[in-house]
Length: 205
Image 1 (cartoon, rainbow, N blue to C red):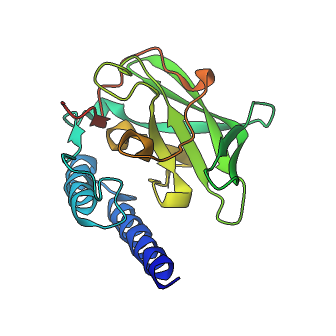
Image 2 (cartoon, helix red, strand yellow):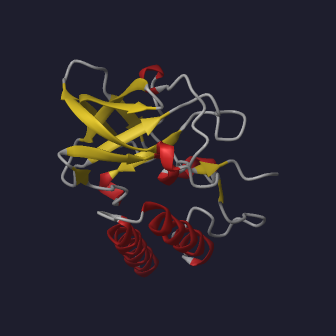
Image 3 (tube, one colour):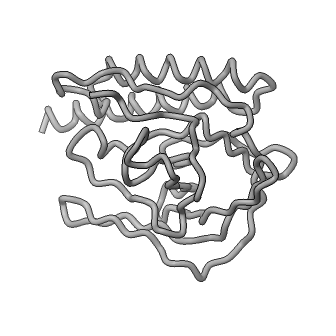
């Protein structure tokens, strides 16, 4: 029991550290500089914290990133809608996490219009959740996709001019890439038919 409590306290500390890191980079007027701060501090946290998905895994390395691309920082317009399919994730202990569709977020990049489903985590903590897949998956990124927003875990960049900040340079791989985790993965509707060469990339073997 004492070990279980120690683990929970470590997890609370890890989540607080992640929340503090995102608080540093939200509502910034210097996106690339704050991304560099986020990238370095996140790598240090993953390398040292006992609750990191890297913890206890020999050979694990620091995460790799594409160079910052300012064209992948866009603002998204949220279109409310609740008819899409939910995401369900069964946990090893028999419990489940449920992510309910609340609409889509539309954005324009390089004169191309895109849309991704937007979810809300059902449960006490709640929060926006935005996973996505793209044409780099299985090549320079994890085959099943990445996360852009996970507000329940503080991965959130706020709003600007009434629109959702979507900076794909902050995209990161789900924890199941690094260990024996069970992660919600993007549905087919969450796939972008372009290469998002921004954010975390696959670590070379």
